Image (cartoon, rainbow, N blue to C red):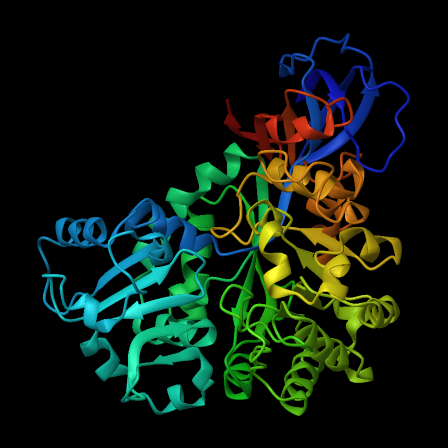
Length: 533
């Protein structure tokens, strides 16, 4: 097949004239050749790209795809603006209940409710006239509220006692009030929400069109807590592949709570990071080291400015984390560690500095690393793990950073340019459904450090802006490196997998403030068109 009449954008490759026209020959799911000028031959399989701009398609290295798909299927509370409206939505959605069915909703933000003067608790859920077992997840995925009867089930779970007490909110009597945070939320999802494979498949099918609309053909996703079992999760994805219904490449992470979880996977499966089918590969071992800034549970080396009595929580001791990383590395498993606060990042660094961590060979990851410091950057420079960033978070969070971060560390928040300047590899990602799914909004945020209203003027901490080329590299080539596929995907070059997008404007022609408005006109995965606007 020939893609004719196309312009090219190859990030980090010098191009004399952005208006040069090429024709691209595709063969066996790969790019066979890139030839200047219009096609002059007689090939019947010719496609006119109408001078749109071809770029490598996007590879989102950190998301929760199944959760996003479930939002399209299950009760979505993201638009609910009051407690009364939430109660009405729940009672309408669950007007006919099956025996043993739970009430489950996602995406509420009760801090914005104007008809209640406190955050929701189990006592409030008693006002919903549906049934006893209720679970509602906050918009950011790191907090939930459950009913009294659900709490009674939870109290029977001995392993739940291992979760930090700070993640279990209590009332004035010292009893759980029904609100839980961070890894306590993960525990509840994992142990009470074992969805059937057919439901997971349908949720994924619901999600795929949205990915393809924005030019995403590869994802690295952490879904196990929305399924209850890695085996069932693997089955859902691979069955879709067998049915020719999987239009993307998937790196499937395995979240663990403790050493026993890790050993259970290692002993049950002989598949390691990068192993799998043509489309579905084993990803990293996912480990949470701390919480979130909004909840003041991200582990900081200094107290929060707006809560001087709090510096967050580390979930593991250093020795515990060192052992987890060592065991994973000994068994050829990549590790991806959620670490937002600088104390959590430091803990991750210590673990990765171990010789037996094999950080360079396995390409371990630190997710978020939103608060850094000069000493941490210097240590990262030595070991060079991949830092998975989410630039779209800046769109909604830049004006809250002063509440969460000591003043002297503000210049090292989301320090994209500092990391790249010291040749510490970074990827750009969405953390879907928390961040924006549209990669061009993330590119815009990384390049401008502004929100969608183009504030603050000149960008927040503008010294950390990165170039358009660097942003695209973080969404294409860098994630391919994490898959150990940097020589076969992530670029528009001969011999590379034919995963590409056609854009309505060349990213290097656009003013930086207009990057967010560039549109994906077509998406191609392994040489097949999978989306057209």
